[in-house]
Image (cartoon, rainbow, N blue to C red):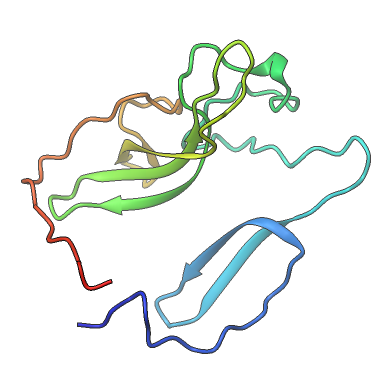
Amino acid sequence: MLNQRTGPWSEPVYLHSSGFDASILHDDDGRKYIVSLDWETREGYEKPIVTSNPIESNERHDPDHLKPKYFNPDVVRQKAGHGSYVETQLGEVYLVHLCSRPFRPELCCTLGRETAIQKMKWTEDGWLRMADGSNIAKEYCEESALSEYKAERDMSD
């Protein structure tokens, strides 16, 4: 079995250093695409705001949502985003994503970005949505029906 930590890998290819929050798409034909948000340094400029019904959020729908006065006190998991789609062998659908849990009232995220998971569903018209129909990141997630699998610890390193 190929050890994914040691390769084999191609030589690195420099792409750019002009942005952040890069995402990669592995197309079915073998091509790869990278999308990233460019750094913006104009005074008063704020990042683009998603207004097309995000799948998951903790944010209030306001262009100034990053400011502390727009912190949503009803939500434990703040800054939810950057999700990866997961589908189990049983057809269950989840979104694994980054988030943070800021201390209150300071709103400092001492633990930094954390990983969380949300139960998802496909709608009849083909859209991925939160299982409960909302778009607010939940503190707890419904457990999968998969049976437990105990993994062997790799002691070769």
